[in-house]
Length: 239
Image (tube, rainbow, N blue to C red; front, side, top):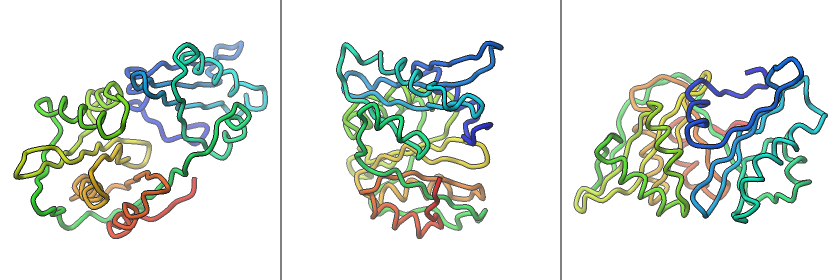
């Protein structure tokens, strides 16, 4: 909260359960910096929560935190991925990271409950539960191209509700989405689906009947998905 991040207790629990988290402390044993790395099997590793407290900035702590998390992949040589803020971008670029695409955030800031549930012809919505969780994890690995089951399972264990979309004829899964809590808003994600219309329908199902503030993140190439989100009342924000 001190540095403007919207993490809550559940966010920290998910990170600790699904990744390797590092922390730096000053001489008074006060937390000064953090970083985490999440290994998606042997295909990919994601770096997150690289945070340096305001009083400790300018002393190279971000670089030291990055040194710690990067040591995890020295022997495997797997790709490292992260989402950079404008403040952190120079640190990552000096270490050889290159920008692949932009992460675009959209928020429904007005507390207006969705008046109707989504309708996708030939498909039905089901809650994510113990009976279909393994199916959800397998679908995500196939769709994402790397195994992030540990993170998704931690979200589920932390009580994040989720919804899945099934083909009514084949009974095969076509997509899913989770709904997490952050400070002051609800975060929809990850959203995984076969097309933009299905992805937006999953988001609509999660906001249906709720008057909370919602945020959805997308990548720069997902313009069609964002068009659907605009219809749902979300608009672009700059963080």
